[in-house]
Image (cartoon, rainbow, N blue to C red; front, side, top):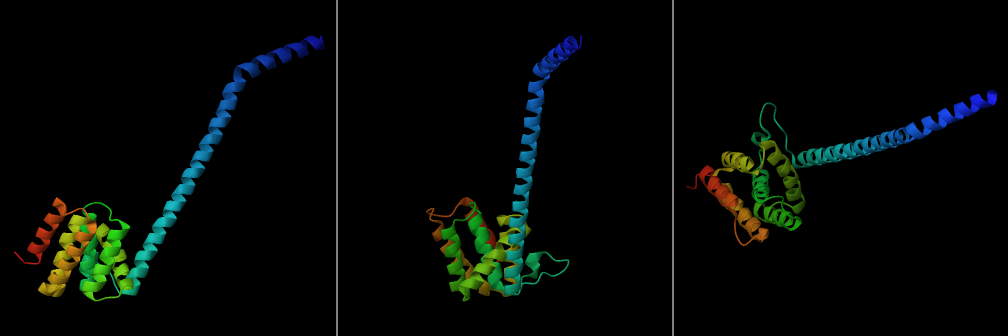
Length: 198
């Protein structure tokens, strides 16, 4: 009799194993896959957080070295007190009207800014780091150009028109597209209106 019980138990165990083993195994594999997927996502999120922290520290370091100090209860553009920062940010925003600028375009902007504003190349590079942040604070290149041009005119009046237009001309040539885009033409018209050239 004990032998029959054992056979029945083995038969039931075999039936249960055959019927439920595959779903259990698939569930374990799916759970392991889900855990691995979430671990990968968490690791990727950590990398993004490190990149953002690195970008934030670059902006803070550039601001510190350049002497930019944000004033409380004011938009960052209103805290600009050096015309070269406004010209550099406008040049970068002008480039970004056609999408993200290439490395060559950024280098051309850096050289042009250093030459026309009579500053060292290292300082021009820091201006572009701050300029990118200012463009983000303004909500994009087009609103940044308008706001920065107004601030530049208040800072330096008509004296900053020639260096600004020289930088924009060299940036447009560096674009290598054979001319200005419609958005860039509109931005130059806005700058001329804001700088009271028209």
